[in-house]
Image (cartoon, rainbow, N blue to C red; front, side, top):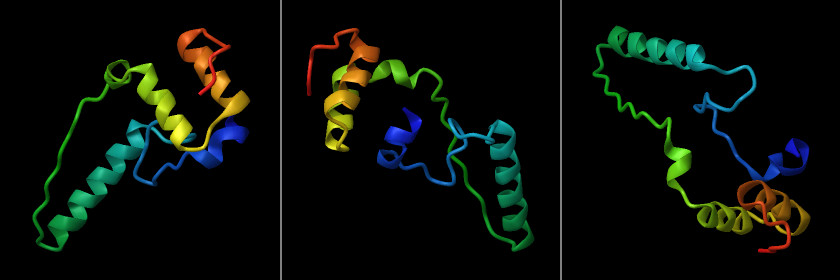
Length: 93
């Protein structure tokens, strides 16, 4: 499924979660490096830290499925996601 859908999904370089070989350790190293570079150049630094642990449960499945449809995922691929999220294989977006 990864090879079938990976071209629909874009992941930015700054995203550390859900990427092979990336971890919170990589994110911490990048943050620390950025802070030290700013300090070395006598610049100010700012950060916003959000705890997004439970965010997946906040979005309805209908919204997620609509976003997949908008991204071009339809037919059998859409039914696969629908089956996973709602256990209803017969529904087609």
